[in-house]
Image (cartoon, rainbow, N blue to C red; front, side, top):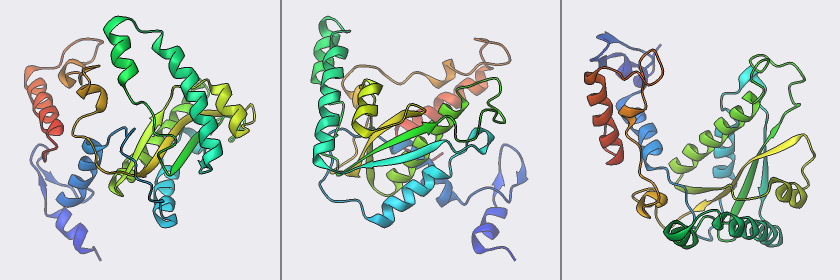
Length: 259
């Protein structure tokens, strides 16, 4: 017997396809997923000191663990960083790399860069390193036989799952990537086969910003989706009708309106 949720879903008609789809989510469930996607932010400076409850942490880690992975290899592991002393060492490693990064920009760009807050390592109650074990599924893996980086790409899927689940829980996540990888290895004791993929700051926040921080700072703007979708061959544009629909949906997403 179908549940009420599926009964409701079966009765919906997809206007474009013109048929009933029993696998489609309810309006509320679908809207919640898109809301998490469009309101997700890279959080740097709004963390509150409140601890993340064990049940909430377990839910977001479970979401990450259910990410897709090539060859079902599940190459990820999750290293929790809570101790102030360890965070201080990580923060020092960030500062060194960040000073080096600032020198790569010139003039006004360098001035803007130096004003940006690019981490919340010490403020976030929980730091989390998501790693990739390249040997977990053995030397020959379905789907990795010709593209060796598929295990790394799979680990990034776990990052995204965790990020969206965290947003639904009211948790902010900030990805800190300005490190020498060897510094993370040394501080956290990673063996050579383990690749540090994403160092994340995690916790409740005072607020989520309306726009991505780099967009508000004038560093970059979101690119037009319609210019990034091609038809059959590289850089062959899609038909004008689809371009208009893509543009309309991007505008709705930026305003966090319903599709």
